Image (cartoon, rainbow, N blue to C red):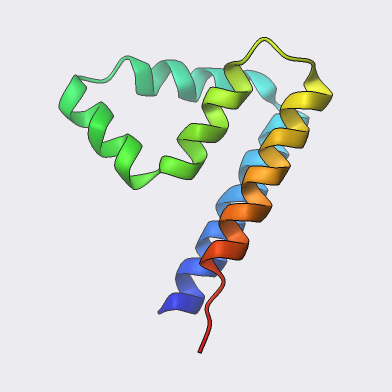
Length: 87
C-alpha cells in the first residue's frame, strides 16, 4: 500500500512539473479553480493535496521561472523522499 501511494505521489509530481514546462496556464487555472471553491471544499482540497497546493502557491509567486521551478523541484524531491516506503 505504501509503495502504491509513493508511486501515485511521484506520478502527480511528474504531471505537475510536466504541466509547468508545457502548459503553465493550466496550473494557474487549477489555482483559480481551487481558490473559487466554497471554503469547506477548499479546506478538503488543501488537506488532500497539500504538497501540490504548496507547489501551486510557489507557482503563483512573483519569482523568475527558474526560481519557481527550483523550489518546486526541491519540494517534490523532499516530499517524495519523506514518503519513500521503508521496511
